[in-house]
Length: 296
Image 1 (tube, rainbow, N blue to C red):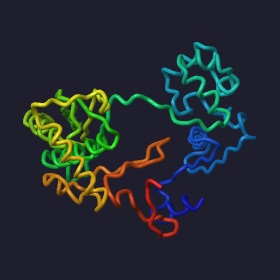
Image 2: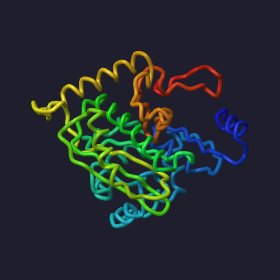
Image 3: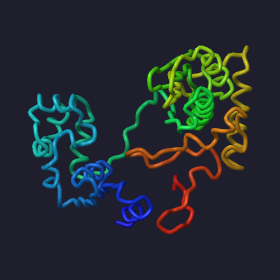
Image 4: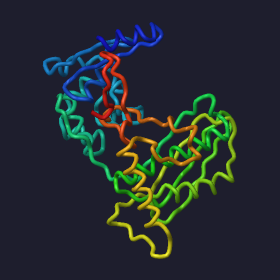
């Protein structure tokens, strides 16, 4: 309730929020659908599954129209039928082991996140109005490369491909390049600058970088005939300096004006924030004014 009150005080009635509290993250998200546009719903174990019955299948996160059709084919048309379905029925309906996870989540079990083999890693950014130019797009893309490559190194991953994209109001642009396996910021930057010479977009609004065909260190044998090992060592040294002395203690000169862009966002079911250095993801707690860490 205090969160809702602070939003009302700081922003006004134009922005409302619905908050759900439940035994697991999945059901807390579902709870936000029970009262909108400004609900505060607590689901307790004793409320399950009856409180879920008024929802449509597509009100559940993860069930779109296509999945609804698949569930209908399995004989599940309502939320009540979804909650009453056996694990075997949900396995058939969802067509994967994910159906069994739903059986547990609907009953309030707090499951560990699914572990996936990562195939790509990237970042995107909605450009602020003053950066909706070619120069602004370039600057933010360079910033995204620095952040995404730092994340590669933090996860001990190497990429063999990079995609650059700019989404414009009237014309988009996308380009990709294959690379020897690397996690080095300089190599990605040089490849990006070559791609940038062939840019073709108008009225940019959103930019993005994706690294793909990722491999672990155990799967990579760097070439003896290029600078990749030395460049990677340099990039890792920069990461260490930033972790010790603060985010952006060392950064690419070309991103001077965009250093504050591309902050981490907390998405649904995400409980941590990637830190690029000491002091990153710190903010003032709006409830008591004390500094709080975003990744605590």
